[in-house]
Length: 162
Ligand code: GDP
Ligand code: MG
Image 1 (tube, rainbow, N blue to C red):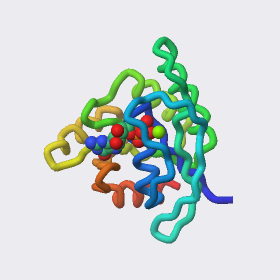
Image 2 (cartoon, helix red, strand yellow):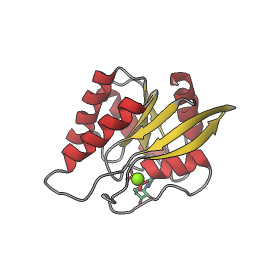
Image 3 (cartoon, rainbow, N blue to C red):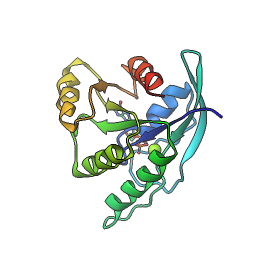
């Protein structure tokens, strides 16, 4: 049985884009608008000669009132099933209260976590990534899932965590 690496984070932070980047092909559905109804989807992943099961999360519906609860719910299930978690935050937005809810779940789970500071498309956004040290999850890895920037270092850290 392969170890499970779950990609967790609130809608629209770039989880599916990161999954496609890791897979090297466009398999996960990327949406410009958050809230497409989908369950967790698993893909066979490989990095540095190691194979793992990559889990994209995104199974919640648009529900303005309940969206935070749904994100937390989905995240909780994914975290439970995972051996290690990549927690994706939109560095250009910064940590939101929903992100902080997920951080609490991550802490409670005691699972190893690698913090992905996504949408760091260029060097000017590095400071946005550094601000995420405040989440208390250790080093934020600056990544542009869209352009592939920083994904190697992120995956190296994820393999260490698995
Ligand atoms: P998810 O809901 O977390 O799975 O997010 P998606 O992967 O569907 O991406 C949401 C939006 O963010 C899409 O419009 C993506 O193109 C965009 N996006 C994802 N990663 C990046 C990134 O690294 N940089 C920028 N600028 N946009 C990104
Ligand atoms: Mg998605």
